[in-house]
Image (cartoon, rainbow, N blue to C red):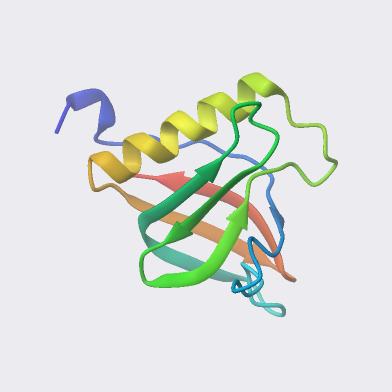
Length: 109
């Protein structure tokens, strides 16, 4: 494991969305909860308008990357996508903190 990848944290406001016809909502509603696991599938389009990812121990929960206000920049999307790919390729754990059905931030380590 590279030294600069031992501990990385990036914070993004996320919104929960149905990722496909077979997916459930990404974050359970109610009290704050944390989904933890390894990055599974990463789905994105060339224009980076939609980025979805799953956590291996919750494969039916697709998490859509976005800010709550919908004003996420292309640069932020590219950074987040690279972080998710790096976490998947290097077996880094991912934490997604959810509150009232919304994913409020992600962190990898």
